[in-house]
Image 1 (cartoon, helix red, strand yellow):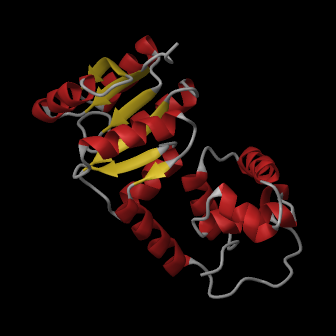
Image 2 (image 1 turned 45 degrees about the vertical axis):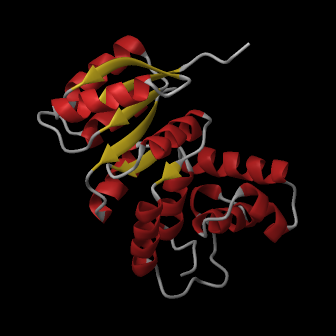
Length: 222
């Protein structure tokens, strides 16, 4: 028996873009477009009425922008995950979207296969950033990070343990769970446990927010 389709809402203030995405995604196997919206305020209303799995969200829109809409959806519908699809990949937009709760970030030059992959990846519980966005994010965070990290800090933020910090540093390096397990000589199951603990203690939703958190607290080396 095949799994139920991924329920999707498309949000974009440009009618042509919005309708084009709907047409494209309705041809995507395993995806069911259950609603559309032309601004952030409408996006929140549509999401609350349809309770989709994924919201594909534009950023720059009238009345309520995509950042605020993402924040509201993340707060009221924790099971709904937001993927940003926007023209803008500047540092401020990326940071704001991730901090608001976006689980994915794509630019509008992404093709149909990339959008479909992002939808499936985020629906499966992972985060996904456009490769160019991820590079910009890491470059920006590295530039802001302290040149050195204290050898023995008195305490880590939010009660993180040394091993959890080791895992967090590895996430900031872009390593997968399998690579972290090999690097730290622990099992993948143990890695997942540490990641769940990190997310719980630091109130993080995904790996993108974990990267921001690591660099902002000086827990990741350059």
